[in-house]
Image (cartoon, rainbow, N blue to C red; front, side):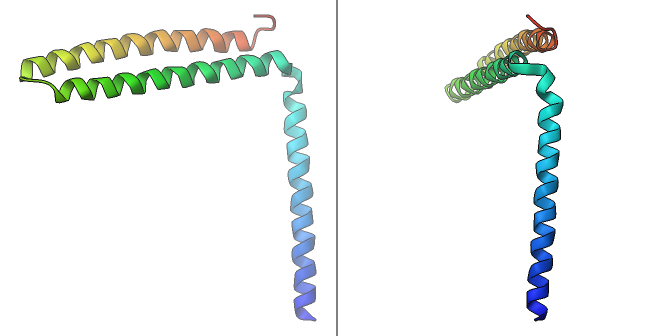
Amino acid sequence: MATGKKDETVKDASKAMTDLMAQYQKMGTNAMSFMGGDWMERMSDMGAEMLQFYTQRMQEDAALYQKLMQCRDLKEMHDIQGEFLQRAINRYTEETGKIFEMGSGAWTKGK
């Protein structure tokens, strides 16, 4: 009998927790409903943009390692690293501006 009471207590606690989670989810969904489909689309576009940027960065990183493995001397290695670093700084700067613009537009209806 003790086991039955324990099982019943676990079931009650589980149901209470499930109900509470459902309420939290509903509150969260309702809280964001004012943003609508446009906002969700803009956020999706931002995510896609960031994913594309990360992919390009990884490709450039792989190309850097390949170039470094083919270096013949330290000057060549230094030049390759300097070019890579400058391109990376430029790309991160451009991407930051692009994401900032996209993010600003996400809060302005109709952009």
